[in-house]
Image 1: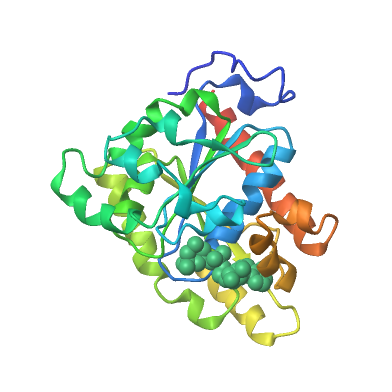
Image 2 (image 1 turned 180 degrees about the horizontal axis):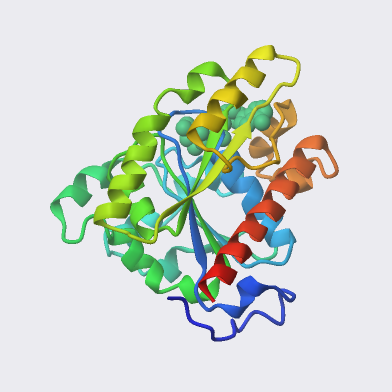
Length: 283
Ligand code: ATP
Ligand code: MG
């Protein structure tokens, strides 16, 4: 059960139900299929939610460190990263860095995270390392977003164990549906054995090209996996979204007012509404 205490930041970030809770809502953005738009979605909803007045922490759980570099941080020069927090070598707070976006902070990744999977196997509470690390900072944010790697290994299991909900980006291509069964099974297993509160928040369709007929058939197939759980905001395929990370920017500042920027802003609003509805249910 969540606490009802007022978040100390509430008066700064505007009135909303989320702010009446001290604990951040933790959302894992996951799909073991590579290149489906997980990181693009994580970075852009993080920036849009922060622009909407939320206090957001983005945690980069992928050794490719794309979310880290996508927000303009050079991961090669980092002294500490999420890897150190997971292995208990640094506190979570000491890993977190500010970004160029007000209200948005990041726990960056480093290529060393690739080794964490192996090191984690050996240590105590190996599935709970992220949950434990987050305890220190869960009261500081409204939303914590976890950008997961393209695998269902121990890092993703840590994300599912720490999360309240899973958001699944799905590329609007036929093959994108492969593996969804296995993903949903892993979520169900974690829910059963490690984290009973875990829920599937829904799927978000990425890289949608309305001119391609296949996309329509993918949509229909998808509804079979996620009846009532596909977000209305569909992310279009556009080169602007692919360019923005090389300038260390989210789309809201790289191309404000564009179709892609509006799509991610709409998706963020939908997510905030879904979080608030969920919290109302718990009242
Ligand atoms: P990985 O599994 O490797 O972590 P990912 O699921 O995080 O990948 P992204 O890195 O977000 O996927 O996207 C893969 C590639 O597609 C990137 O080059 C990204 O810039 C590009 N991309 C993502 N979304 C879009 C879009 N809507 N339109 C055009 N390009 C996109
Ligand atoms: Mg990624």
